Image 1 (cartoon, helix red, strand yellow):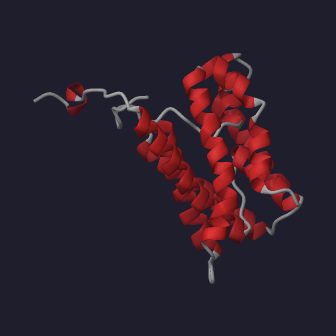
Image 2 (cartoon, one colour):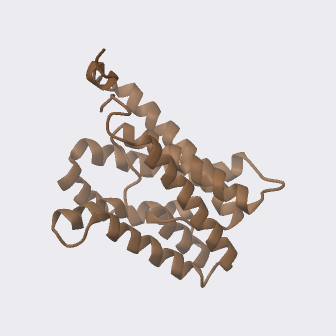
Length: 207
């Protein structure tokens, strides 16, 4: 009997499948983000930077997140191509809108921060997983990290880790240390979701 991976046929996603995936992925991410903002937690990447600036100012997260990502689309186009760049732009725009609307659609009477960290991290991880499998993302630092690696400046993982650590360190000036500790837990859950599920051969579809 041949291994399952040898019998797998790679199917191309249809346009409506990509559209639905971008909506569902950003919907999951927006719900996880709502848990984070209600509990006053932080995360890494461009989402984390936008959250940090939101906590430190009166500007809404959605506007900050959309503007932060604008400089990275040029790098995304050069490294990933136009299809990925367009899908990512749409995903960022939809998440920016949903981040504003979700708190108007749901409310929390009681929300334990540790639950918000775990559930929020899992939801954002699943949202990213859906987007990754349809050749989209939430822009930001991961594109810059890949660009830095291509130019042999720094390995992408180290660069991303350095930026995430910098965001967490700066967040100590605006958040209690236990909120930052819970944020680290949430980031671990998010990355565990991606590490377990986003592997070569685990999913055969392509966009």
